[in-house]
Image 1 (cartoon, one colour):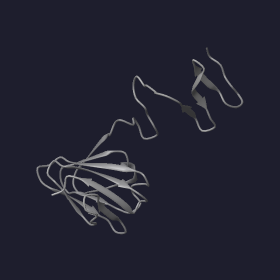
Image 2: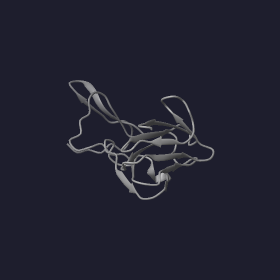
Image 3: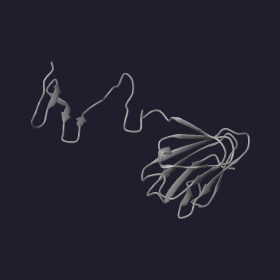
Image 4: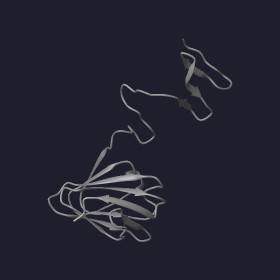
Length: 145
């Protein structure tokens, strides 16, 4: 049945238990949610990491958050306040040679394996993921030479 509630909460129940409730901010689901296609947010499909091919030396930009940067040469530079707090970027080395992930000024690129900071050398055909705490503290894990 189609209906419109113009004031307050709307709740859908199954066997007397509330399963979906509307709120001022959206909805709350209790139990298992199943999608037949995909879940999508403002960036895109939550289970999809869109590739973005780059050539030559590349400097990350804000629009790279939530993407896979696919490089073959020149490496990648990570500057301050490019990856927003909580943002992630994956870098894929499409080369038989190592690539340098350069730590920009006012950035701490923390290697999650040993806590070291500084530039990282991404192995041939390696991948790494960067996660930002606040735009300056970036945590990196992956295949390093």
